[in-house]
Length: 269
Ligand code: SAM
Image (tube, helix red, strand yellow):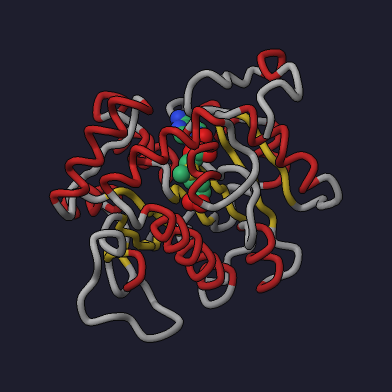
């Protein structure tokens, strides 16, 4: 995207600082990013040369997870929090291919997601995009658009895929997860993927993320597992992304990039 193409500031989009959504778009080889975002990724590549693959692993588990939730688990409604810019195999496409009519609410606090999401979703009555901040979960739960598509008497797929590591400890990620899961009935599921402090490279990357992007907390598997407290963590538990119900063979030994993020799904009893 060209910085001078639109009046980005009028849309609430700051092209002088990297944004989480746009830097993720860079590693997914998308086009909705600016020079400042590409410069950030260039620094991360120096520490984690596989960072582009990590984004792919995350999109792949998102696909496998949503297929499971809309298929075997029988869910028909999804709250996808920190949904990111539209890319390929978005949640609504995977869910609706598995269970036509599935309803999806995308939530993101970056206005660029709404700007691009609207175009993609204009013709899909079962899907909507809301600009909101998960640090205010009560507002999301009360939001008109969320209430229009999500029936809180029926099980919900609560997706926090690739987002909780963008919350600082003092922003209370645990409380946010609990507030969301308290609002949904038995049979709902929580789907989490997050950066994990699984190598020295991960620890080094955390310093770069914090310094250049302002967020990016690489938590231990024990810390990430705590999000699933009170829920039934489904097999195979919280694992490096490529190990969660893989479609094909997985290598015996995982690389730094393959271990950089962990993920899992749990069911509310
Ligand atoms: N969930 C998608 C996936 O896994 O492919 C996108 C993940 S992307 C790495 C993280 C997204 O979370 C970004 O689009 C970012 O704007 C959004 N985000 C970060 N902090 C947020 C917050 N406090 N509230 C809502 N969205 C947030």
